[in-house]
Image (tube, rainbow, N blue to C red; front, top):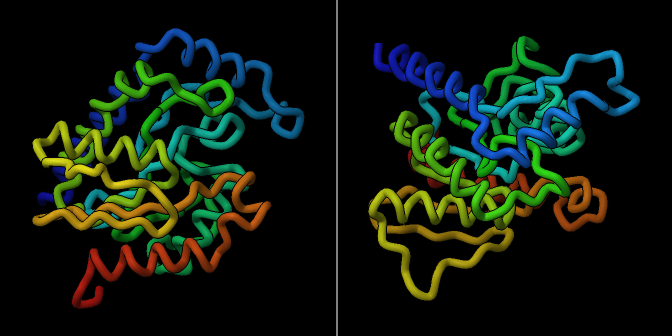
Length: 236
């Protein structure tokens, strides 16, 4: 029953996220992208709204990215879905046993996450992939609410530096002391605060990183293996 209640609560939060219009610049940009469209998707109806998190309500591992992709999640309405970044990430999650399929094409494709949840610091696609500090601050309560509803979180995995800072800011708001010097982002970075959750870092699976070899499948596989080790120390 608790899992059903959690799912219902997440559904209510999703509805709040989808209705959000707090950031005029982001509203204008997400709707422009949805209206103009990319040539390859010119016949599709874009989502063009804020994108809620996606995954298992009982997740032990939460991945926090930057923002929806212009022609990925802003088109499909699901985090990391419909673009090359998503192909890379869901392939890794599938290899780790956290996703039922290596492909995420659209909501309704049957894909399920097992023990994992994917969200982002910013819920709307920003121009040049750069949300402003004020825009991130306005989105932060959504991350706080999601993580409060996902009561079994043991590992927070940042996909990129903005995700890392969003996680630290969330923990500070939740009353967790952040040490000095402040934990620094890097691929494979770890911060293991007493009482958890563990905080891990990975380079973002953007094409800029994956096409240049800055982030390889082996590299993200190693980070996910560490996340599984910390989330399920006795095995799943």
